[in-house]
Length: 51
Image 1 (spheres, rainbow, N blue to C red):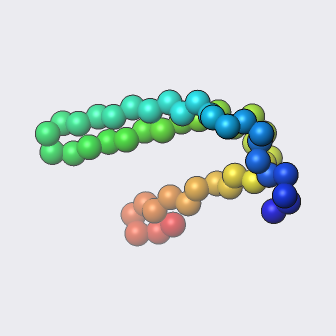
Image 2: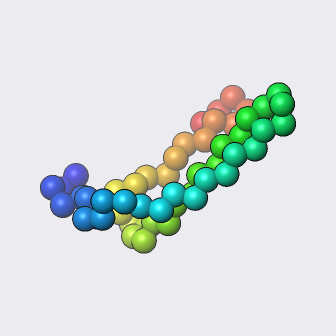
């Protein structure tokens, strides 16, 4: 990673949602990535026993 990986912005907008049904809690986060080719990578997802 290069030394200039920071965007220069001190704050970023992060949209959030929370769902609660008395038994389960759900969290949803979304933020805009202006440079999809940047250093942020795909997130692995664990589903049915496999990544």
